[in-house]
Length: 173
Image 1 (tube, one colour):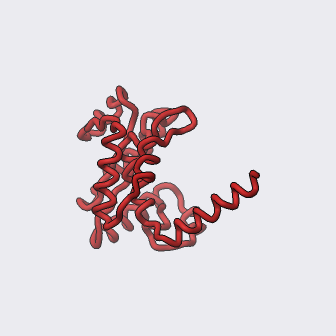
Image 2 (image 1 turned 180 degrees about the horizontal axis):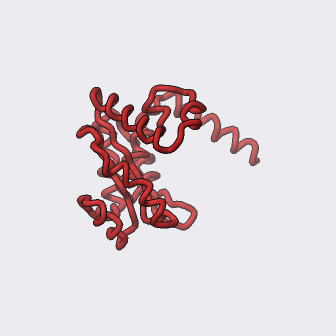
Image 3 (image 1 turned 60 degrees about the vertical axis):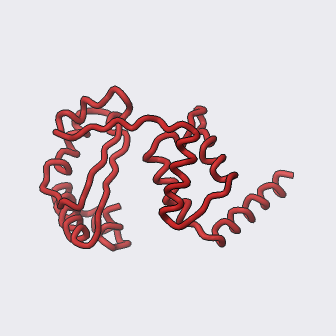
């Protein structure tokens, strides 16, 4: 992701930087990009870092004087909010969305991007489960991420998906 922010496809130069230099390079890039647009950094599953040393390695991101147009969102499982108290960070609890709320949010997000979802697509979003049987789109951050990706597709993309599905059906038969 550093390469995306730095507008480069050559990550080999970044990989050669030591950790302090990489931090400074990223901070400089964030500052430059934030002059033109807002940036949101998502650090998911902060509570699942394996030890407190890994968490301390992220402190620089929170402690630096980052531009006001850069926002950092950390996520964790319910009941693990204690890790944020040390960071002097506001804590907001996002409740799990009901299937109806998933549909309403999806329609709103699609509408804001001048897109429209079919009833089948809405049903699929509301009922999609992961391998453990949990509803995938019931977490707001995942629903928003999925909708942004979904709304970036055009009719050609959907035609290619349908063709691939058809090839899979023929192969399976």
